Amino acid sequence: MLKTLKLITSNEGKLREMQHYLGPELQKIGVQLDKLPLELVEIQGTSDEIIKDKLIRASEVGDFPVVCEDTSLCFYSWNGLPGPYIKHFKEAVGIEGLVNMLQQFSDKSARAECRIGIKVPGKEPIIFTGTCEGSIVSPRGQNLFGWDPIFQPRGFDQTFAEMPMDTKNTISHRGNAMKLVLDYFQANPNWIS
Ligand SMILES: O=P(O)(O)OP(=O)(O)OP(=O)(O)OC[C@H]1O[C@@H](n2cnc3c(O)ncnc32)[C@H](O)[C@@H]1O
Ligand SMILES: [Mg+2]
Image (cartoon, rainbow, N blue to C red; front, top):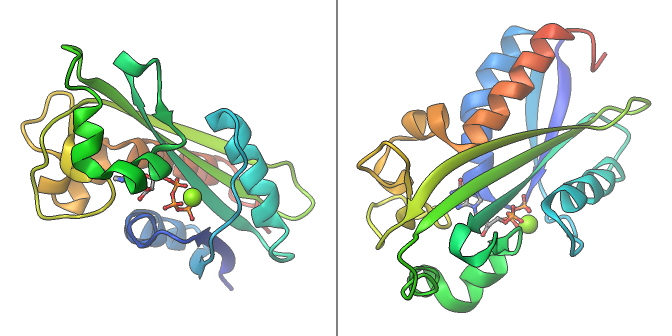
């Protein structure tokens, strides 16, 4: 019988990417990824503090294995801001506004970070972090997931929004964190039983 891991997020884009990449791979090792669309409360703090707290809140949703995620977008010219507050910045000023935040700086470089937290009842929480270096550009691309149209990963001519999901998942912050999740499950096959 498959063991179930509930993915808790309010974000359809994250759900899609995580189910697309993790779903089939986890199934091969006997774990079924199920979705639970729910917005967890997020504290203020560093990205590490936020995911730790978010994971505690996720584990309080029910007595079953849970996975949650938190994404940061860090501008080097802004010493790491907006960071974990990117959602609020984007809601306040839009993606054009995010591009404008860097107008006066020649350094447009940015780092995307993804933290995936997993909590199995009775076991220690585990957090996996993946990053992706890139730069902030004028919006390009059809995929309208978050700030994808303005993030061009280093070494690529396309923004995330111009790439197929498969390509994005092989290089992205989330893809890199998801690889670590799979490595962990493969090394610890009985972890969630
Ligand atoms: O319920 P949760 O999982 O928290 O979903 P959320 O949308 O609130 O997500 P975050 O708190 O992690 O905030 C991250 C913001 O960055 C956006 N985002 C997350 N991952 C992204 C990605 O891979 N590409 C573009 N935008 C992304 C997302 O839409 C949010 O506006
Ligand atoms: Mg959130």
